Image (tube, rainbow, N blue to C red; front, side, top):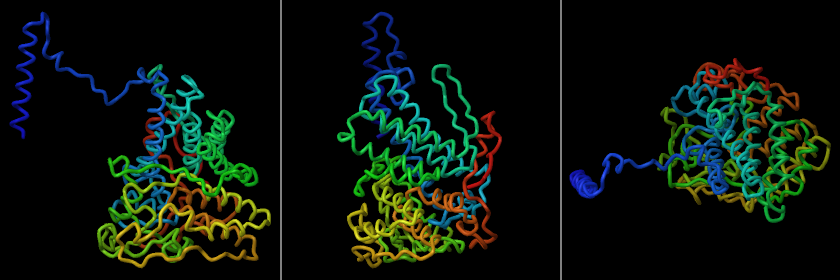
Length: 472
């Protein structure tokens, strides 16, 4: 094969020499020099025709930030610091995350921070391009909404004090951001989402998918800002059946589902249960299709132990392959926001929860277990979930709502933010919410309730020295 390619190359060169002999001033080196079309310079992105391509770049960078294209992202690392996933391998950077003791020089921390900041910057710049070139072209409201979501994710994942920097293409310089509190990031997110809704690029009826995305985003931001009544009002018109998903594919590594990879393809993270005393049951609730996670059987895509060869693997079945989609926002989240507001005010929140539990089969993206995966385990046969009864104590009612949130939105990047809200908004002690006590691989759990900003930000941003605080 190499020999034939060499003959072809020589033949082409010989042809060019013959051709050039008849052309005055022909330069073979220049003739063979071809511009690389893979990377478009900023100067090429100044026409309205590039907007659809920019929109796709926003979606792609957001997919990577959530977890596509690798093994680290908002979903898995949020699950490690929270109580959804447990470390089952040997990479110490992820072990720090599971143990709630993360050093700012942690390389994995830097990876997910860069991915999320890149998604934020791409969405912000693309929003600006739409407004500069053609604000009413379909796509502008969507990317503006997704920009708002990236600010929400930064607020939910990281400490108070996240800087928001940007690169000025016109002057070829960086604009380094000042540290911002979580509340400031959420306020910015809400402003972006409000603008996207007021200036929606098409009639609401014709653009319902994006309008509902904006509504759910507004609800999430408002809930994080402790404005539950406003959050419930924001999502009131979102249908329970609504779903906005992020695409994954078998086509390329960048498009692979990054939750499938470290839980089934590589045995790095196992599904937790009662982690550090406080963690929810997750894998123990085997009859609940929302969190079905049987013990691996040593088969392909069903590892029995982790990469450390000791930790038992309980495998998530929500993302059964590389092309499994991720629900980014949906009507279920809208109903859960309404339920939480009712629980705060003494309303009949449990009716909302029970309506969804009765409708479980229609609200699952795909059936869990052997229908999607060769687990050699019994399938989940429960067509719906039994109704709940509201506890008598108000605090227990809130706990019930948060468990339903955790199960419905299992491994979607919501749990860490919810655990922080339990501390910040409901006055619960962090050590009664987060895993605590003796760590199963030695030592003790730390005290982290969020991630620090990684060291490269300290080294490169003159406006940033450290988190303002590590409070929830």
